Length: 242
Image (cartoon, rainbow, N blue to C red):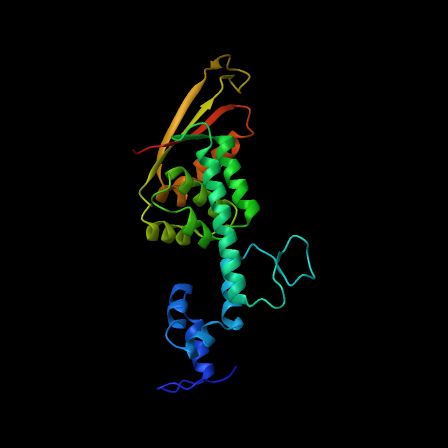
């Protein structure tokens, strides 16, 4: 890398160290300060770790490996590649938003619709930052917020504290949903007891913060069971607050 003169001399290795400690918005702001910082902040050694950190579920290829990997041409810099993948994820996030909007009701989701949206995110290989950036928006319905939260916990295995921090930053942690489920009646499981347990309906009100913590484990597990357990006739997730 060629060195460019500065009013205050900063060795290239020191400048690279400084730039490598920054998050993307600050890195871009620093790059606009001078030609020297533009060159430093565009370095592949800075942007490659940023790509891999933001999208850990993704495979990256220079064209010679797996057919399922996202391709990066040899001539493309990692900064340009980061921008390209970001735009791809933004477009795919829009498709998830549209999927939820086209479901049967704007106020609630049946369990098959809800799990279908999570499957879309899984197929797109979203990272936590994508979920926070594109789905944890306060202007989105809390149903979309919850889908992103559930995906982070269940598919990405993001620690609860990291999910909570993302909810707090997005100012959506107190938003609430109501999860309703309907259990079919059945005979007593004990041979010596001859009685029938009637159909029952249940519901739980939970905030997104509750769902990110241990309070939500039972409910999130129930949502998965509701798609396969014959005893559960229906599971529905509804917006709790206007």
